[in-house]
Amino acid sequence: MTLPRERPQPKSWGEAVMSHPDGRARCPWTGQDPLYVAYHDNEWGKPERDGRALFEKLVLDGFQAGLSWITILRKRDAFRDAFDNFDPQRIASFDHRRVEKLMRNDGIVRNRAKIEGAILSARAWIEVEKAVGFSNYLWEFVDNEPIVNAFRRMSETPTQTPLSVMMANDLKTRGFRFCGPTIVYAFMQAVGMVDDHLVDCHCRSKVGGP
Image (cartoon, rainbow, N blue to C red; front, top):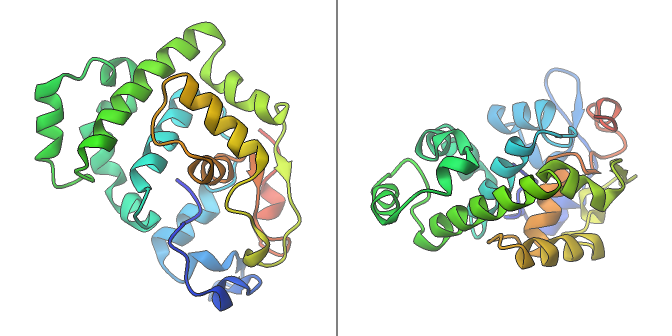
């Protein structure tokens, strides 16, 4: 659950916060879509420490690759149902028959490579969870504190950073799939490892602690 990577034209992304009918200023990528607005206000950028919730967000970001985030957001409940509420232990045991069943589920993104990648990522999650805890593992990359940026325009926000490259490479070596540097940076924004709410966004004051 992340900053959409299918961006509008650069001019719109160069704008600062957008005023909404409720009198609040928000990051402009929400537009006026109520689902996006709710996601922006209630989830995006808030530090997430639960290992299973982090797994869900990472997997869904992988499914987003090549698509708009709103597509995934609208299908999120169907994904949760299809993937056993993103229980890594259960997903790790999915077999060929379960993959074929998922490929017939029009409520999700029916991409075989991404489905099989989610299963491999679940198996990798189990190993990391046993060793150090998945949440501990991820948050160590930012020294357990959110990185707070001070951007005033969306055009200033990066799509990847040296840190997201490092995290992506490490995830891949551990067996995770669909976790390139751009996906990982968007993931970091979504789960509050990076606070990229614009300086004048009304949500910024709510972000910055676990």
